[in-house]
Image (cartoon, rainbow over all chains, first blue to last red; front, side, top):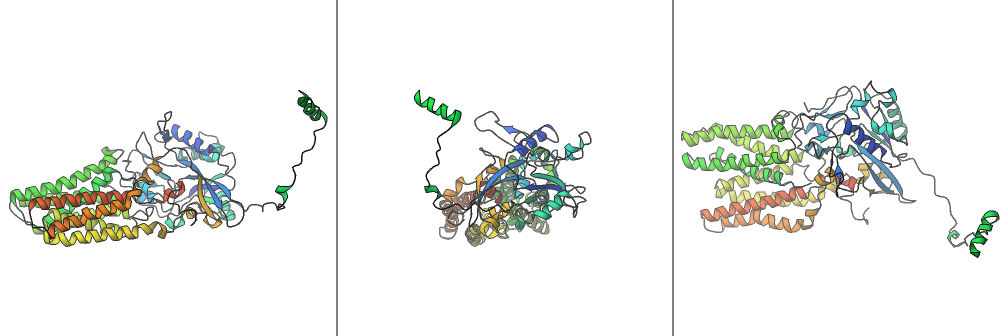
Length: 248
Length: 298
């Protein structure tokens, strides 16, 4: 049934730190790799070595420029994947029951063998979290690496989503937002976690931790650009090299 | 939104077909025998042809029967259930008229109600989407039902009803265009709320996640057609309402002219429905730098 559960036992999701994300796209690559080789249909590409390559991804990194009223502009790298919303509109629009939200952990999944590829769930998602697979013609989305997080064949430190495991900056955190004492809940509380597009009423589980305030720019003398450049004569070995090269 | 030809053909033709069935169910006109067969054949060709076209955009049409299962939650599922129910009921009602010269009146009423419910469910597939503010409004079902009823009256040859209903559909369309243009701004969704960074200053897309297109940009972010939107609106409105109305009301009646009125109306409906999709702004476009206000406003 594509009706949403009233509550879920856990609210698994990601806390994404916009302060530390460096925009390296490592999580995108890790996600694509894991989800091509494991759960569900492989994440396909269309024309991968041709003139116009494109493909399905479950995680994409945007970069936005924020220009405050005063002070310098700031670049914010912005990873975006499924937010596993409590009121997921992608689930209720599904005509076949392929799209569902799990009662036990709140993960939103697609039963690919029941998906007719109508695309309505992608239309219903405000975040662009769902993409049609160009080869399999079924809807693909972040599974929160459901085949990693409970997988006892993996070492314990690997039982987190591939994007979290790979992030070199520690900008992605995985946990249960239903537990107020979990790392992600505490991070969201301490850092003022943000819901994306709250006015859409989706009640996203994933939280975005906003950039911390920046240090003020150093107070430069207005005349400093007009100062003569400091050009000391090189001494020692470099001085000898300089003179020798001049003579050549 | 990407104006997929299969969806435009589906919504226009099935809307007309179910509109015609709604009038036949009311006995407008009361027809029997061969005449009834022709009317019902036209209605079924339009309704079923439209539904068949809608399966062309599915990735897995062979699983389409699963789409009838989620009627409790999904408008797309409800549309399928209503459509099949309407077609079955009207087939029984039509069989009475064609083969037994008998009009089973209550059955016709049920068929009319189911036909209109089908069009309403079609419109709700779009109206339910908060992500497309232009559609997320009760005017969307009003527009779809107005189109179906006006086109149905025209096809059913109910000139006295069709003339005013064409004006109603045209007026509804003009109103929807007028207020639809303001609805994205009125929705309050901006790149600021989409990123949660709006409180810090102006936000603009600096770099997209990739250099090429993707499913999202091709499906949700259609900008090409908007350049000629005003001209298309004028042409669409003329063909949809003005030309058929003039033919019905001003010119003397002839079957050839009535046919011309129908063709003009359908052509106008196709243009208007193309614009319905092409002009619709999906909020995901904000992440990709679409729908951004000009720099002076930012």
